[in-house]
Length: 207
Ligand code: ADP
Ligand code: MG
Image 1 (cartoon, rainbow, N blue to C red):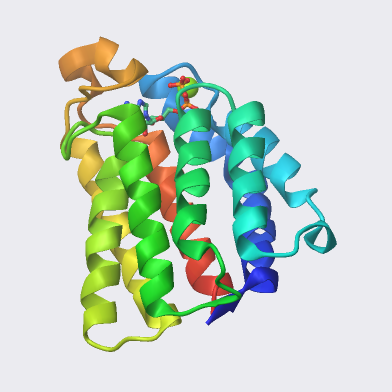
Image 2 (image 1 turned 180 degrees about the vertical axis):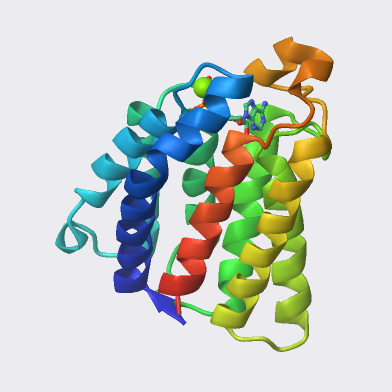
């Protein structure tokens, strides 16, 4: 079960991981993009980490504010995508004070639908969706077998990591990396990498 404190802990954990790994994210983006993914994400997650839990009466209100903060601070392609993820995640969490496996699964699913609606990426386009999609599938499989929140999120993080690794061999068809065409092959996608960090952080914090 995950309450407001757990969601807040998730964002604190993610912000510290992104701060630690910002150079690595930027380096990935330097190779197939414009070398700003780490700095974009570090700026946005620091702004999110500065939100005080006491200012929010519900998970829904907090997650919405997280989304709006990411939209206004991250920038680039990834800001609106991560922002939309959290804004859409809020829907299924309305009225929920302690999210269980099913509620969290619905929230993740709504968030990923938001990423899709916003970015129009398809599986195999070498974007963050290539991490989100197997993560969601793994989450559902574990939840369907009766797994608790932590087990489902650990499976999601594992799925995301596999999807992230699979982006290496893909040719980018969306975002800046698509300008490189075939030359984008052989390099890991930065957004799929940060999505994996987000889910690993969730598996540590949201249970
Ligand atoms: P920008 O590309 O504007 O510099 P970032 O560097 O912050 O923005 O983020 C780049 C990441 O955004 C990519 O690695 C990719 O995962 C993700 N991305 C870009 N375009 C899309 C899209 N249309 N759908 C999903 N993800 C996308
Ligand atoms: Mg970039």
